[in-house]
Length: 304
Image 1 (cartoon, rainbow, N blue to C red):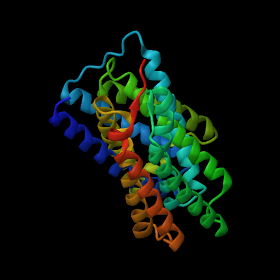
Image 2 (cartoon, helix red, strand yellow):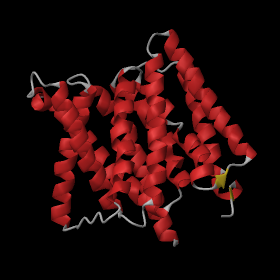
Image 3 (cartoon, rainbow, N blue to C red):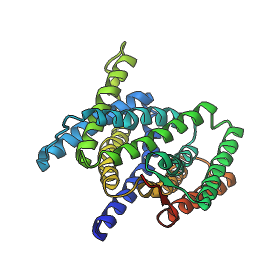
Image 4 (cartoon, rainbow, N blue to C red):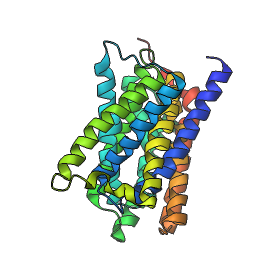
């Protein structure tokens, strides 16, 4: 791969993670007006119309081919399972904790990469992984003592981590069959179908509740960010990065998500930033960066 493509893919991964970092705050704000599943349904209404408009304006074509099932499987993990776990997990924890929990994605990606991508982490990478996990444990214990983090919330966020890892690996594997736009469009359509259906059932006695929150300017602002910026722009960038970079490389910027989310929670949502949060944040960032910085030099590819 030439240096320009590598640079553009790396920049795309960075920009996507910055957008995701701010999405934690927008999700928290949107949940003040609607249930988690309704927020996601509204998010994908915006995403579908936004991405469809982009498709017509740019005159892009979408060809799914005979291996459509691969796109369906990928989309079941992202957005379906991921956003269910993430939204409910965030509602049962704090913005700071949820962002730090999500920072486990590159660590779990490295472990799963041993089997799915045939890459073996070095001993030092395991050390940095342990440091990152310990940071999450410290934050979890600190939050639980204040009654701000629930056990179910932790479990749900871990489910979000696993879903994200499987999505990244799947997106990378099918990148030669489907373009970044096709992958993103499939995710958007499936997300719309699944979450809109669930939201309608959830609000069966009052169907208008599915879209009534759009009457609030604050909700509209949050959902437009979540739908178009986060679900469309960010995933186009991430799928593009997955096309040109190994999965471990695309997840290197997850620490940026952590930093952005924590700062957003403190500044805009008035959440507390304790000493434990500061220490665990530093531990996780060092751990994640250590794992990823050693990646290209120390990973040994297994022979097929």
